[in-house]
Length: 352
Image 1 (cartoon, rainbow, N blue to C red):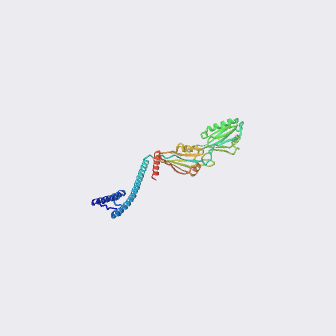
Image 2 (cartoon, rainbow, N blue to C red):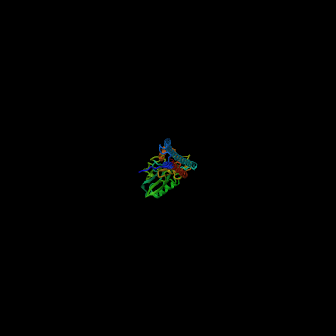
Image 3 (cartoon, rainbow, N blue to C red):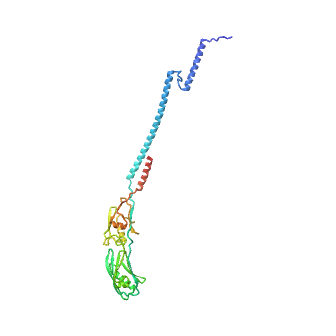
């Protein structure tokens, strides 16, 4: 048998109060768990949907803020790049200004070399066609001597009736020695008992005038046909010669030198004379020479501009193997500028 439980009004109020407290504690725990004051639309529909809209807007703004942060970072990187490039350009400018104010490099040495088109210079020789045991050529004969740049002379040689070949040689040399033009340019000798007359240099030309005495000595073929013994030089080379009066003009670093070929005073007619003339050209250095079939024209290094201009008669230039025209010296960089140029190029690579 059951009985009814009767609660007083005070107890019922306490129970209801505890129930409400439990309900509120549950709601508070939900707030603490979610961090939201309104967790569902049932709590407060207006606030719930307002909060949802604001949360979505906050997410959009957060995403936009992230994009803005990325853009700012990109701009910062670009700014840093521009700053670095500006510093590199400023360094390059500074290096260029240093190079501009530094001393300039020297003009390097250079040369021009010509190869002779003419044959070699030679000295003429006359060798008798017969040996002399005892002279049967008593009498005299004439040797005509032409020396380029000096002049001409006729040397008369007298032969005694008892002269042997050695005495004949002495007679010829004595006559040559006594002649101002022939002296030093001609000599006689005995070659195995045979008379030999030799031109001493490339500028001497000998003509033995034929007569009975020259024919008996064997230095002419007969008593009527003269024997010519020519030396060969630049002027009268049989292969390719430079004509009288032709010229070679050399202008070195603005200073001109005029060389005239010929046999007159002050003119050049052989390689020795050409070597001497080139040696006196102002501006050419010690390496300039005429040797081994070559004409060497060397311009030395200088701190100021250098140049070599070649002109003259076409035939003379052709014989010497030279070409007409002007050649400027090339200016190089000094050590300071070379170093600065290397630094400048390195900076340009970094800029690129």
